[in-house]
Amino acid sequence: MTSVTFKDILDSVYNRVDDLDVITPCLGEVEPRLELAEVQSCVAVGAGYGRLDLAFLEHCMPNVGEFTAVEPDPNCAAELRARLAAALPNVRSVVSEETVQSWPGVDRSVDAVLLVHFLYYLNSGERLALYRRLRDSVLRSGGFLIILIHPHHTSGAPSAYCRVIQLLKSSEESDELVTDREVRVAMSVVGFELCYERTFNSYLSVADMDDTFLSLFLRPGGSWSLESVRQAADRVFGNSKKVRHDSWLGIFRKP
Ligand SMILES: C[S@@+](CC[C@H](N)C(=O)[O-])C[C@H]1O[C@@H](n2cnc3c(N)ncnc32)[C@H](O)[C@@H]1O
Image (cartoon, rainbow, N blue to C red):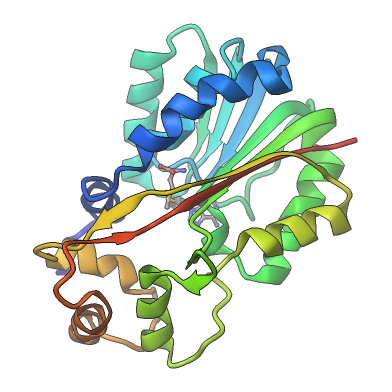
């Protein structure tokens, strides 16, 4: 399994989720409500190859002229460059192939920042530090911080994904299990105003789990093997064909 790339894992997961179909129709409603048409510059952190990030650009921010993506994975960064050239040829775009920690930031503050399924890669202290950095040196006053996460609970109970991680970590608590509540609290501590939120019911297919999909649950330096992932996934998913895998969208504004 050493030849599986991070992009292979993303492809495998994206083939199993219906979130794009559920979220995209709502994005056109958000744009006029928040006047996102005024957004001309945008940064996306952890943009992957832009599957959802490009949907936000196209449907929520139709007038973006400058786009910066921060994405350390070389395969994702290469595909993102190709997708941007094909889908948004008139947008001046830069893909910075590095982590947000090493990214030097922007010369001029931007109108919007996207954090789409990225926050899991930071612990809670690092998340707070990122919000502060975005407030202090990346976003202009009145700019939007757009956050999409799997909130790791479904109607208050831990999601199936969350339970797999908890079994592997043998712990109830895990930094990567972000909740919408945590984001709302941190945002108000940092001084952002919530201007829109919505939960989307979506599903993850767990039929015929292959090793590429299961590798989603491996962690660099993690102490568990693919075999223990397989056992944890079997225990949690059982004979289910699909499990709830909701998404939560929060849009915040810097005063
Ligand atoms: C789950 S993917 C989401 C991709 C994309 N936003 C989407 O929703 O389709 C998260 C992305 O964050 C990137 N990433 C991980 N750690 C990062 C870091 N420290 N700084 C910036 N990006 C990072 C990964 O390479 C990955 O492409």
